[in-house]
Image 1 (cartoon, rainbow, N blue to C red):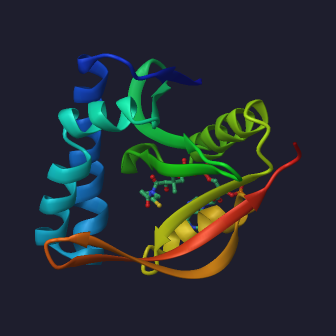
Image 2 (cartoon, rainbow, N blue to C red):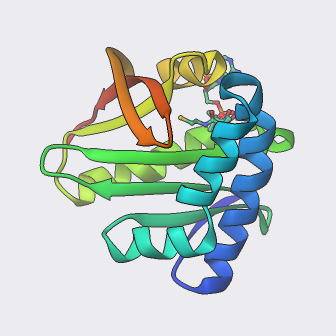
Length: 165
Ligand SMILES: CC(C)(COP(=O)(O)OP(=O)(O)OC[C@H]1O[C@@H](n2cnc3c(N)ncnc32)[C@H](O)[C@@H]1OP(=O)(O)O)[C@@H](O)C(=O)NCCC(=O)NCCS
């Protein structure tokens, strides 16, 4: 059974940071290389960085599968869309519909906030996740390049899913 718990304490932020370390190193080092992942984990996914993001309006949720933390989600309410900033499931738990349940949870949040769109960004070489998003109803809106400092860029596509309000 998949369940979601809002992250609000330093213990939660620490669990998320550990999940990020394991998922991002395995998944992204082959895509963007170790120096960029070392930089991004430190800048965006340390427990302290997550705490600051939560203080600035991001909501983080831990994903539990049969009571084990197996991933996490981060969302932010924007004027016209719900931004799905992060959705990550440990590799050994993928293809069990946890991503799909998580997306339903995110859609409920979008409806709650009266938003008709969910938007996300995904690395252009993150092929399997792009396929998963397409299966979950997202449409590719084209490239979006973001400078994240230290000489690194994020080379993404923006994808959007329209939902019933
Ligand atoms: C993307 C991710 C969250 C999907 O989670 P998941 O639990 O594996 O997804 P589900 O099992 O719920 O599958 C959802 C749909 O996507 C499809 N899908 C999932 N992984 C896929 C893959 N590798 N290739 C093609 N389709 C895939 C499933 O078939 C399913 O569609 P269906 O219901 O029509 O069969 C997960 O694969 C992940 O964490 N990936 C690595 C990290 C990442 O890149 N995150 C996104 C950052 S932008």
